[in-house]
Image 1: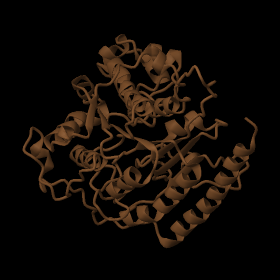
Image 2: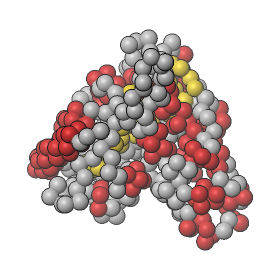
Image 3: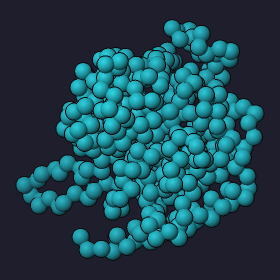
Image 4: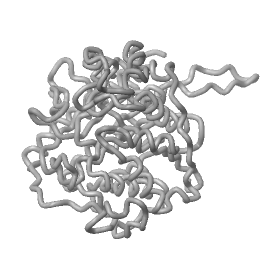
Length: 408
């Protein structure tokens, strides 16, 4: 299927507004300028799509009217010093999510970019769509949280989960279209609490959440659901899954747990996959928690995404996310773009001369190698994880079999 285009969502307006995000000033410019300088956007396989500007109706599919009325009013973000502190606090616009000029446009464009990616998969032959400015997995229904002001991951899942358009025929009475199965896979260092909260009480068997992250006391978003699940809990849901990894998680650890990921995928058999490719777990990130590498070795970030693109049969959206070493985020997402278009770059590729070139010192190459941090995911812990997820796979299979037996 080498002739099927890979969708890449970008526009000047999206890059400019995303570069104002307080937690990641100028990251979007750095990322897309590297992708462009490596001539990845010139590939015959790339189809560049400009993002729509998400409407109020688009956003209200998930977010509450009170939240949207506040966050989309430019008066509330033009001058943070005059903002209503009480209302800002109510809607989470404080601390790690301060209001900033351009916030309404940011919300509309980031949500619109991710929805553009999902619509391309729903309505065209494209099998992969990329939106590196998306992936805001902490935003809640009525609050900003964790550097995230809009729940574009949730909006993506809801859009992909809609029944496909019905093709009318005069000769055949159309059957009710089958609702697609959507799997959400989160590779960010931090637990995808916003996505989890959106679906935790859902009775649907058409959505599966799997977040691989770090969880420990005091670490952001490490609520109870972030820890290893208790499959004996009567409230346990085999479709809402968390796989926490300890400090120093390396490619070897990811290679070990990736077998679990693929077992879950094989049982669930999704039609669509949303991958949040946060790269704050890579070595060199300011979070300094994992020791994951970008490289070609088994279990690396690139290896995982290459398996998704080449081995999994579902249509896939690749989203951005965390990543606070901006040159390394650019390296990672440029490398993943090259994998997606079937023209994988060498990790020894020199960074081309362009406006952000000095930021790539001292190596000036594409690679993000592992550091010297010790992997705290020992054999005992990994055996425990495997035991828990062996039971998870059994329960998931049972749950889906029960659903299949129900009358239409």
